Image (cartoon, rainbow, N blue to C red; front, side, top):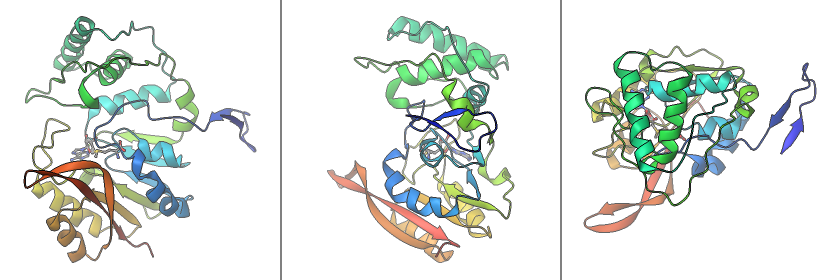
Length: 274
Ligand SMILES: C[S@@+](CC[C@H](N)C(=O)[O-])C[C@H]1O[C@@H](n2cnc3c(N)ncnc32)[C@H](O)[C@@H]1O
């Protein structure tokens, strides 16, 4: 849907149906019906996402101002290129040989310290769409090691200029969440890797120590905070102890539980939000 935005000096058209351009493990598009009514109450604030991943929440909410961070430098480089209206002529096909050729090229760019820029963004997009389950996984040397995805069909986008207008006033950073500087006019939505074993998004694991470090950091902020995570008993205990209010909801995924498959439970934890 293309809509003319009133009071927009340049009479730009903004596409309101922009979908997240990447597939992202742990993406929160499914959570938007729960999150948007809460976050929309703070529409004049800057949205800070310390773990922005596939941007499902930022693109669902489309705040005027946002600080979007992820420790994965390749995904942040991709978004920065979208801010400049990336268009690509890269040959994209659902082909295993091509996939491993492009993976090799991206890993050369990483190894030579040249993974900032449009070539790396284009390769990363192709590998994300064609690789296994939207994973973004790296080995101990920082090399991207996700295998070919074996999808029947894949739709590739070559023209990303639709994202330019929406991303215009958003700031993208690639660092550990604790390095972010939070302002008094911010609202924070934090979606860290789930508290489960064997979660590997980037080359570092997100350990129980990191879950505690995050909860303590969020607990000290004097701005509205919403956090999502898997509803494990230790996560609920951790956030309750820090004075967060907890809502539980069922997630659209299954987990193994004593050898059976059970519906996973999610929490939303709130601080400084009535
Ligand atoms: C559950 S995903 C976020 C998904 C996102 N909300 C979405 O809807 O697509 C968690 C993200 O945390 C990032 N991450 C892991 N450790 C981090 C850290 N220490 N600081 C910042 N980001 C980190 C991962 O790269 C991953 O993209």
